[in-house]
Length: 377
Image 1 (cartoon, rainbow, N blue to C red):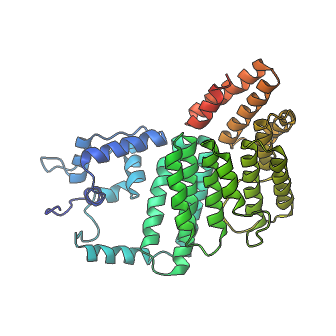
Image 2 (image 1 turned 135 degrees about the horizontal axis):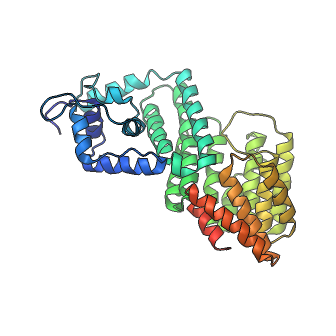
């Protein structure tokens, strides 16, 4: 408990998160590292900013632009607002705080939901090109923001779309954690995604989060468990799901069968996915990056896993057609090409693809792909 009222909103928010200045400075350093931001803050400097004035009572100089951006990302407020006294009475009375949060969340309308969706699309776009190294801090901050708004919203018509956004943010964070080489953290994010998805009337979000979680099992070398989990979703026959989601789940099932070494069922799943994708039209539902090019890339990945020589032709064609902003996807594709070249005893080409993939993967913080690539150099 703090007897003295907070002098600035920054000071209040640090207290509200139950952080010491040292802990907060460390968290800001991690965010700076994750986002490539050059701004830094020592605990002492942070304490001066939170006080709002110098020890002699004179005004503070404005923080450097990089420092200001870092504070704004972490606390989700304009830096000028952060360095002013709180705009509302700060109370440590739980009832008063709850009333404030409920009142704040009552302002959420469809325009706010649309804005959050736009921000999610923006984060996806950055992630696919620059990886978790640039975006993971923002994704996690956006999860907390959305979760807080949802937790204090009263109407199902507001909670459901917020839950859908939270679920998709958590699946994005789960994929980033897996890509960074932390399957345990990825699993936890996918569990959070499934919990949020249960508040969405459309079952597509729960199916999507569950199917993404199955990819973790493949990485853990438990393909049979992944097959069982994906097959339980019955994507080939579930008419309650949009055809685009069903196609995506069938492709994931095809990858799981490939990891388990079952060529026939893997190729059958990809054939079914292709049929559904061809018949699909734009639909509402969770975002999946799946079109003809991406599905062919996914099939090529499975063929490479299975050691099939036709993977070379499939993957080479896809590499020429792939949208260049899908940097992580292109990295994985080159590793698959390296794998198939190894099976063809063409070790020079395998090494060339693997080295290029490893270099790009390191740039975007994809430890998962770095490990795969270096095993083939």
